[in-house]
Length: 245
Picture: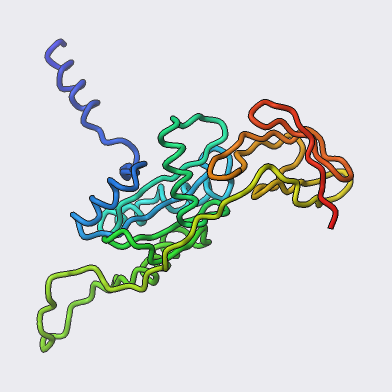
């Protein structure tokens, strides 16, 4: 009986996991270098991985599907730019993600920014219905990739070695700078109210990082009143009053 134990163990080790996993980097600069070396594009996925419902749908319906994986392996270097609420990023990663969010003026999740092999932004998209086929088609349109694999006519001359297409790039963007914590508006119904604080809309009990200057403050909404809101900012209680117009 012992002679069968080793082959059985080897069979268990060699069984591939369910679905191949794509490589998602967290270092945008390393991704740019890799894309340049491999003649690919960079896909930056700005996401709230553990709280954003549309981000989770995009991951499940597109990023986890083999059709997207095949497209990505041929054309893309993938980068996750995450802003989670339930898990803590290390300080250096959080700061790097904040800089990317400021650089590309991202105001909602999921946001997809595409860079060419020189690191220049060439397009932007987000969640799309239709799964990987629709998403791949949108990326192909933005990146001007021809996915038609039919044979070329015999009389056509062989194409030159593939080079990155020349794409229109975005002009340099000046990062948005936010001031001190300010209550900019109140909305919603009597039983379900919302407060707009700087760049973030919160209901009672919501938590978020709110931009102040070039840094973020951890804000929890405690109570929304007729003309003010009670919050904690980095653990410090305070009241923000709505400015009269």
